[in-house]
Image (tube, helix red, strand yellow):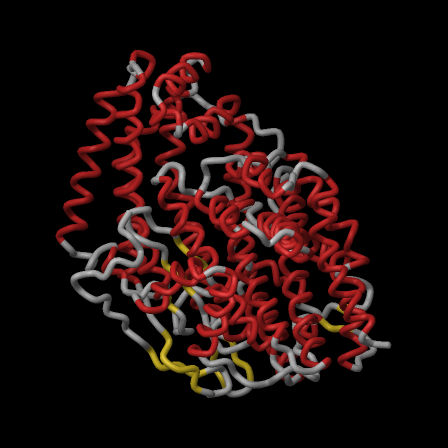
Length: 613
């Protein structure tokens, strides 16, 4: 991997965009991606070179190794793994470029076509590789363990093969696995339909025409009438498009049900648990701990907020309303950068050094633009390049926390890249560690600077809301998905069926002080995780609970914490969560672990209640 701080012979051109917040206040120059570190253009000769190489590399890999894995010695098997890893890297580079370019402007037909074409080519070229994991799982465990013991360089890949072998009980015939590999492009097409439909929606609030990201942001507006108008407009637009969203969800859930049934998966969540390398009982313990804590967390907090807002009943458009005492100023981009970088540097200068290039070298795309995908993410691309961060920055205080969150992902991905393509990828349960920790560092740094009791109260309340959104809301999402996939196994779900499942988890998680407007039952439709990554959402709660426990250790024993923390991030996917947490004296398989994390949220709410006296 290229060192992150080595000056390049040619500077990265950062194409800045001067942007405005939703109220017209300048945010400063917001950076846009420079994707040239992947490829200079869709017609770049390097892209054609890599496509040609990939086609031949996959063909020759199959010729050299299919049916022969059981005859390889340790050195030969290492060569095989290295060739496979190189193929993954080139394919990942191609698809990262196509995907990032598409998400910048999902409504552009040429970009959608380019991504689809690249996906088709990569799928076709890599089809001969399907044999690899299938044949691997037919090898005796003792044979592979002997090879790992004989060659230390090969042995470091053992965690990858352990995860592959965990799928052994659910593996189909070679012919069926190839068929499912080829069929994957169909599921991708349904995902693109979802993305393009969401990006193309238009909302009218007042005299403004908005995309979904800007409209959702209005749910945090200081004016209650504006929040209500935005909520009702979201409900109207989603309702008008509900049959499309229901069709996408039905199709994706049915496809998953068919695959799970053929593979013999015991439940719809199992494939996610396997890919996360986490035991089902650990996730169940997390889920149960959070649901049991609803009255102590969200119910209690929202009752406090109802009083602060002077309301008889909370409406859904009040959930993320700012407090009356909250600072209404817009946070410009330069201030957001300074705030986050100051918090990162306060924890460790090393963390700030890793984060700095994201701002200066075109690794962040920050502005809200027509056709741009909503939300935010950090994409690791491939280990020989660097991650890219996408934001939709509007200058809200929560946008600063989003920057801290996604930048944490970026730091994690940079550190883990040293593991190489096959070992750098972190299971989702641990992938949120650095992002949530980055948020916590930023929050704590800002809290220390609070000048008044009112300012501290506002900041504490904002953090509690973020944590409730990360823990309570995501576990409610997880329960909704569990119900959705279970119900789909019994037949087609009407939009009304899905609406009912959504509402079944909302009152339980938000609490008795809420009323729900007509139309809120459709709000499941815009959540991308349900389509792109079924059951992803519990990873947010996992990460928040883990980080709360980690931060408690940091406060109790700061000596040497930073190095242990960086070692954990550097490990990527090379270690199980038990190994990674052991140096901190933590164990996620202990049910009490989750209560430790939830107690931090309770402590903040305790402090907020004490301020009422």
